[in-house]
Length: 204
Image (cartoon, rainbow, N blue to C red; front, side, top):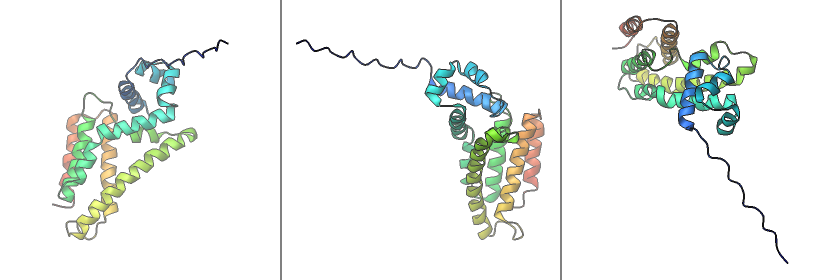
């Protein structure tokens, strides 16, 4: 008796695009527009793929944003890690501000901060995105607070100042750089802001 053999399983079609390149292009769209204003049409056009391909490779829009945020932190926020390794509190502050300045004066990236842009006008549907950005920011703040608490304990910081207050001050300056950079401030104007901030920084 002849036995019918099942046809060989069909392999999925290989992806016809570079996933890393597509993600980098998606990051640019999110960075330029923010999460809510980045439409699927604009995302797929920039990435050079169809919606089904986007869903297959990255999941939904929210999942794509999370992956873009990971890429943003890996490639654009490396100065945060470098800052924490500075030997003094002043060095930490200067590395953070100079790093933020360099990113805002780059000619190849959008201006502004991805986190600020994506949470500034979040509606109810984008609350999970806002919560994720805030969680990541809280992690960075905690690391900086621990670093400045060490500086306080070592007598480097005046006793009337606290580590959390210094971190909030720095984050306000960095957000100000991002907002002004996104609003058209010149490189010279942003550099002046950093120079002035360091001139009034309360440690030597």
